[in-house]
Image (cartoon, rainbow, N blue to C red; front, side, top):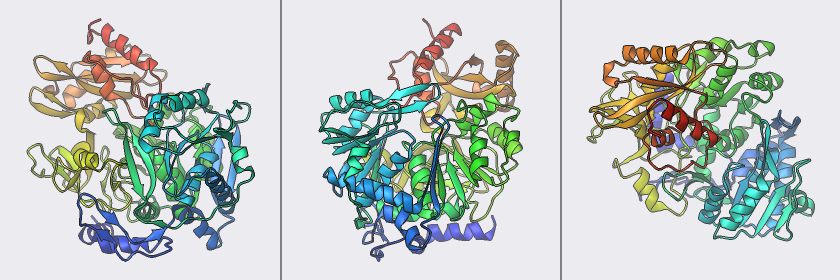
Length: 632
């Protein structure tokens, strides 16, 4: 490990207060913090507790103050509707302060919660920043999310107001939002006071006055609102993650730490400077969209792309290359599943050759494990570094990554590189002892967590403590499992519940999936452990083939089984591979392994609210019955 990175990392672990105080000098404060870290009540740590700032001021106003108001802040491109627009920092601030005034007109004040249930349109970003401007706490819910899920978020946050749109567009279909919102409002015990709805052209819906008003009406008489001074430890937002139990978990973000950490990451992790064009192909409903479509790039003062489209089908597998080429994007951040989709549709990369990607310097992947085969495919096609990095909704920024702005490190396929400055990552074994290099166990982070991570859960301090901070005293439990090698590289092999126990051997489903994804005909795959009377659990593989494969399924299954036996060994007792049409996923691209496992084990399951297409579950069930895994 060369000196530059190792020195910076060591400073961040040995003296976090100094390290983050220095980073905090890079943001705007109404009052600079003198108390950098309060450790008096673990696991509830407070960063920059006497600092006073404002999220929106750091995203917009500061750049205008510095004479960069004419610079492009946001590029909107919607291949689904054909709409395109660009906003300078001045234009964006003008729209944000106007909508912030509209929120004030509806009696929204500092600390009130506002739910934003929107498609990928500029108004969604404007609504988020407008909340930040006046100190309201936004809770963005993925547009098109099920009514009961939206209702549970209304109830938990006790939101005063809901901002929505008439519809969202998916390839080939329109998702009408109003019926979903109406149903949610009816289901929720807590009653919102007002709804502001953005009418999409050609999809206008009827509004019921006075409770519901249009976006246009809301801003028609609104006055521009200024930034409100906020204490560093007040909350910027709540982002709900679907808990496995009933109530969703409200991850909260404190204002000061959020601005400091996210701004720091843009240069240090992603090597982005103020004159660069940055694109995060995610959705604002997810953490990646919060951190890396909206906040971090605007804190940095660069240009960010908001894309209303998909990697394939809007209109084809060249959609990503077109955006990168059109806007001279320097770096793209997306989920591995997006690249697997492109690889499946266009394995030869024919679309790629149509575009000029001379400005494109790096590709970052996160959201789930990037299989080595996908990384190698992308590297061969793009001829640029492809970087798998790892983080969570809870942290809001990377726990491990190749920090390209500090020093480029070599790629190890299958690893998410090293712990990022600020994170002291360890592996703990089931017997509570620290693992040696290359020993598998639960991945944990020594407390305190760095700034920008979650200080607690919304109105649920006890749940925060019990869920995350009690299993391993003094550590945050990530619920990911894996190992750290001799060079300090972190290998995330699976979620803790994806470790399977085959006749006493602990095996990672991620390791088996890695082997399957190397088969030349396999586009993507999932491995799950199903209950077995003799061995406890047995692994089965589900594989989706690339377009244009004409080998029969039986041959592919046999070859896959042989590959696993060769690379992992007979200990895996791996005998079953089923070729399927598609895998069930969440809208953000995570494969729903737990749900497939429940179907295979014939136990009761709930259709996950985040699922992209529930019909896939029926297809999987039929495939499992056909292959005698599941008895009809």
